Length: 248
Image (tube, rainbow, N blue to C red; front, side, top):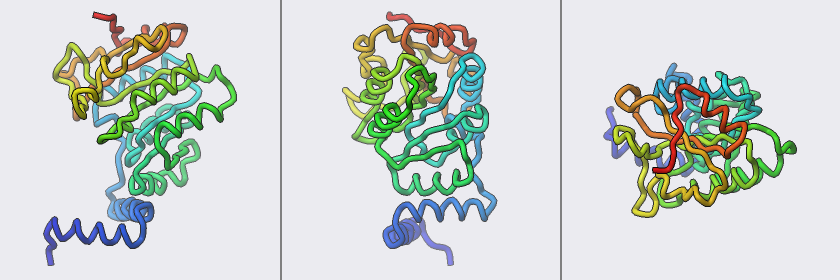
């Protein structure tokens, strides 16, 4: 018997309600693994080859100590960053189902540490917990979805705590390249430079991908990289797959 999509959604909702969203997410991962449909790193960074190369260029140019991620989802980007960098990855997910899926996926990965948490609370706790203020971290911010948009607060938390952080924001408007997609949740909640109000972050430096959207692959979502002026930002300026952005 072939079930209709509506019927399947109802069954899925019922099962998840009975066993709990976390367990249901873990079951989804096990189902995919048993069917040979394991999630793939090829989908990392929206399956964008240019963005993947940009990440690798960053890892070569800057002596990062750790990676921080908000918005694990099913862990494709998490897995790519962990494997290609060899660094510890600290990541958080606020959806119980997605958390359950990724928790099962990374159960045996010692350098991946996943938390079930709101991204703002996660960043506060992580930055307070780590002892060395000179730790150089790469932060990948991808927890934005829906009405509760944490991005503005995420950037304030990061740059208030450390001057040695490089933050990459996914789904961001690239001002001079409309071919890149970006998220907008209303007139005051569009992921762009106006929303971030970077003039309030002392000495913030801004970088966009050097690759044009017409040359990118995958979903062609935009991104921006932020760093405070200093040694880390100077190293960013040397990365060939980036271009510095000056206020226009």
